[in-house]
View 1 (cartoon, rainbow, N blue to C red):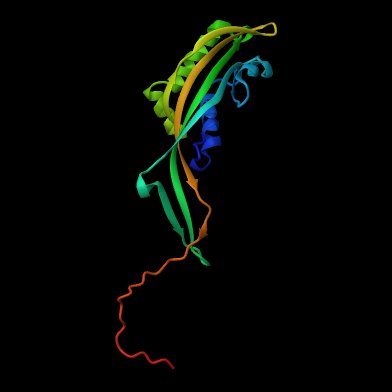
View 2: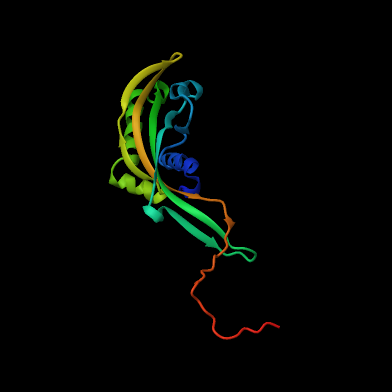
Length: 201
């Protein structure tokens, strides 16, 4: 199980969450997908011989960490040729995921939909679930709520859906600037007087 990378939080957060859910489902009967397309088109594009869990990023809220001069950390990196300077900023990134479930009659219909919703709730809701997600991914679950049951048809196939499940998750990210040459400016004391006579030559 991989943890999020603070330097690549945008791509690693949904990937880690997807892997976490997949590890707890039988993939012979379930498919977990991350999509940035239209959620309503997903069932038409995806084969329905498996129960489908769909996660969509609905919204992201970014907040900086630190106060005053503590917002940016300056790092001086020693180098055999020249010293370089980089600056780091830390941020919280709060994801709002929209989760949907699709189950066909062939894959268990109403009963399978209820079982899948219950399993997803066990994975993501409550103190023990939140701790498990944190330990394995470094993702902080803020809330898991919602879920509306619907029935629709894709062609001649009845699809038992759960829509409107909302997962709020937070991760820490890091932004590092490009390295620039660093020159240490020596402090000068204008009142410093070197006594005695200086002989040159």
